[in-house]
Length: 121
Image 1: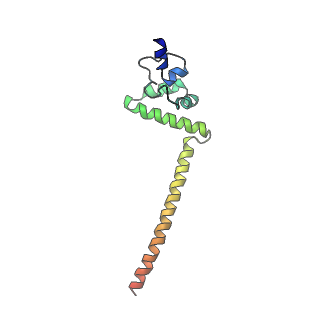
Image 2 (image 1 turned 180 degrees about the vertical axis):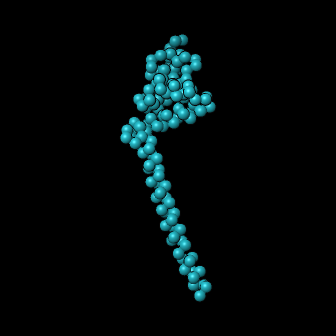
Image 3 (image 1 turned 90 degrees about the vertical axis):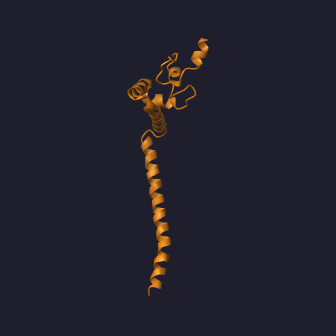
Protein backbone atom coordinates (compact mmCIF):
# COMPACT_ATOMS: atom_id res chain seq x y z
CA UNK A 1 0.00 0.00 0.00
CA UNK A 2 2.86 2.40 0.79
CA UNK A 3 4.36 1.84 -2.66
CA UNK A 4 1.10 2.94 -4.29
CA UNK A 5 1.11 6.19 -2.31
CA UNK A 6 4.74 6.89 -3.20
CA UNK A 7 4.06 6.15 -6.87
CA UNK A 8 1.23 8.68 -6.79
CA UNK A 9 3.41 11.43 -5.31
CA UNK A 10 3.60 14.62 -7.33
CA UNK A 11 6.77 15.63 -9.14
CA UNK A 12 7.78 18.01 -6.32
CA UNK A 13 7.35 15.42 -3.57
CA UNK A 14 9.18 12.86 -5.67
CA UNK A 15 12.02 15.32 -6.06
CA UNK A 16 12.11 16.03 -2.33
CA UNK A 17 11.85 12.28 -1.65
CA UNK A 18 8.82 12.57 0.58
CA UNK A 19 5.29 11.25 0.62
CA UNK A 20 2.81 13.52 -1.04
CA UNK A 21 0.45 14.86 1.65
CA UNK A 22 -3.29 14.95 0.88
CA UNK A 23 -3.27 18.76 0.71
CA UNK A 24 -0.04 19.06 -1.29
CA UNK A 25 0.15 22.48 -2.96
CA UNK A 26 2.15 21.03 -5.88
CA UNK A 27 0.08 17.93 -6.76
CA UNK A 28 -2.65 19.57 -8.89
CA UNK A 29 -0.12 21.50 -10.99
CA UNK A 30 2.93 19.24 -11.14
CA UNK A 31 1.80 15.60 -11.38
CA UNK A 32 4.29 12.75 -11.29
CA UNK A 33 4.51 12.76 -15.08
CA UNK A 34 5.27 16.51 -15.26
CA UNK A 35 8.49 16.95 -17.26
CA UNK A 36 8.57 20.68 -16.54
CA UNK A 37 9.03 20.43 -12.77
CA UNK A 38 12.75 19.75 -13.09
CA UNK A 39 13.18 23.14 -14.80
CA UNK A 40 10.97 24.86 -12.23
CA UNK A 41 12.99 23.32 -9.41
CA UNK A 42 16.34 24.26 -10.95
CA UNK A 43 15.34 27.89 -11.52
CA UNK A 44 13.08 28.69 -8.54
CA UNK A 45 13.43 25.90 -5.97
CA UNK A 46 10.59 24.00 -4.29
CA UNK A 47 10.21 26.36 -1.37
CA UNK A 48 9.82 29.47 -3.52
CA UNK A 49 7.33 27.80 -5.87
CA UNK A 50 5.30 26.61 -2.89
CA UNK A 51 5.26 30.13 -1.44
CA UNK A 52 4.20 31.60 -4.78
CA UNK A 53 1.37 29.09 -5.22
CA UNK A 54 0.14 29.50 -1.64
CA UNK A 55 0.07 33.28 -1.97
CA UNK A 56 -2.36 33.09 -4.90
CA UNK A 57 -6.10 32.42 -4.98
CA UNK A 58 -6.84 28.84 -6.06
CA UNK A 59 -8.29 29.96 -9.41
CA UNK A 60 -4.98 31.61 -10.37
CA UNK A 61 -2.62 28.81 -9.33
CA UNK A 62 -2.88 26.73 -12.51
CA UNK A 63 -1.95 29.65 -14.73
CA UNK A 64 0.87 30.62 -12.35
CA UNK A 65 2.27 27.08 -12.41
CA UNK A 66 2.13 27.04 -16.22
CA UNK A 67 3.82 30.43 -16.35
CA UNK A 68 6.55 29.34 -13.94
CA UNK A 69 7.16 26.22 -16.03
CA UNK A 70 7.36 28.22 -19.27
CA UNK A 71 9.65 30.86 -17.78
CA UNK A 72 11.89 28.26 -16.14
CA UNK A 73 12.30 26.31 -19.39
CA UNK A 74 13.08 29.53 -21.25
CA UNK A 75 15.68 30.46 -18.62
CA UNK A 76 17.33 27.02 -18.89
CA UNK A 77 17.43 27.24 -22.69
CA UNK A 78 18.67 30.85 -22.72
CA UNK A 79 20.25 31.82 -19.38
CA UNK A 80 20.81 35.42 -20.46
CA UNK A 81 17.46 36.43 -21.97
CA UNK A 82 15.07 33.72 -20.78
CA UNK A 83 11.50 34.38 -21.89
CA UNK A 84 12.49 37.92 -22.93
CA UNK A 85 14.32 36.23 -25.81
CA UNK A 86 11.02 34.71 -26.96
CA UNK A 87 9.32 38.09 -26.68
CA UNK A 88 12.08 39.72 -28.72
CA UNK A 89 11.83 37.06 -31.45
CA UNK A 90 8.05 37.46 -31.61
CA UNK A 91 8.38 41.24 -31.84
CA UNK A 92 10.85 40.85 -34.70
CA UNK A 93 8.49 38.44 -36.43
CA UNK A 94 5.55 40.85 -36.03
CA UNK A 95 7.65 43.73 -37.36
CA UNK A 96 8.53 41.66 -40.43
CA UNK A 97 4.88 40.78 -40.99
CA UNK A 98 3.96 44.46 -40.67
CA UNK A 99 6.61 45.37 -43.26
CA UNK A 100 5.27 42.67 -45.58
CA UNK A 101 1.72 43.96 -45.20
CA UNK A 102 2.81 47.54 -45.89
CA UNK A 103 4.75 46.41 -48.95
CA UNK A 104 1.74 44.49 -50.28
CA UNK A 105 -0.57 47.44 -49.63
CA UNK A 106 1.75 49.73 -51.60
CA UNK A 107 1.99 47.16 -54.36
CA UNK A 108 -1.77 46.90 -54.75
CA UNK A 109 -2.55 50.58 -54.15
CA UNK A 110 -0.21 51.96 -56.84
CA UNK A 111 -2.05 50.40 -59.79
CA UNK A 112 -5.38 51.55 -58.36
CA UNK A 113 -4.11 55.11 -57.87
CA UNK A 114 -2.59 55.32 -61.35
CA UNK A 115 -5.73 53.82 -62.86
CA UNK A 116 -7.94 56.40 -61.12
CA UNK A 117 -5.56 59.15 -62.20
CA UNK A 118 -5.98 58.11 -65.85
CA UNK A 119 -9.78 58.07 -65.60
CA UNK A 120 -10.01 61.64 -64.30
CA UNK A 121 -7.98 63.16 -67.15
